[in-house]
Image (cartoon, rainbow, N blue to C red; front, side, top):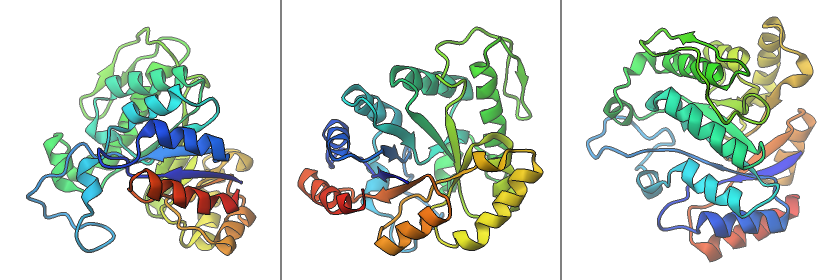
Length: 276
């Protein structure tokens, strides 16, 4: 089982370059970065974890720019988003960004897809909140049309479409590995089985119960059983927890790093190295 990491990189934390080099030097498999474009000060949306919203949410670096820096100073480190708020993007521009990063990194990019929790942030992007999940599905299918080997048109359900087009570069494998984040349930699993390679459950809780249900939905959708990837995300590790994920067949787990300065982050990396 591969051991990767995630962190809220900000203007106050360790730099992407320093972190990426440290991860590869120590033998970690990958680096996943979250996304928030901004956090409106006037906000009714509750922080999902409860309490005050941590400072780093409003200071998060653009994940694609930061991952581009990480790609440039590493050879094999996997690079991913955890997650991209797809509905907040123009899908044609996002398809180009993703394809470019995947191409320049030699096919190392994983697209983590998420739906968001902050209504005010989404509203500033013109996202109608109740439709955000289906807008995300629509956008992923549009991007896949642009990544197709031959020019492929796509007519979307939300006024977004693309004519058959030449669009280069292409992701190395035709489309990047795609994992959907979110809480278990039929709605979430319909997205996983429709356009993704697997699920990215935050914290990894309840997998013993939910994973059989996802596998049932996966096979019912005609997807090969062995191709499903479940990657527990933002995990605070202990030996028993990681063994449990490995026993469930998870190919990778993503450990949470603190949004700290260089010394703090590297100290935690050194502590996490015991799990490699």
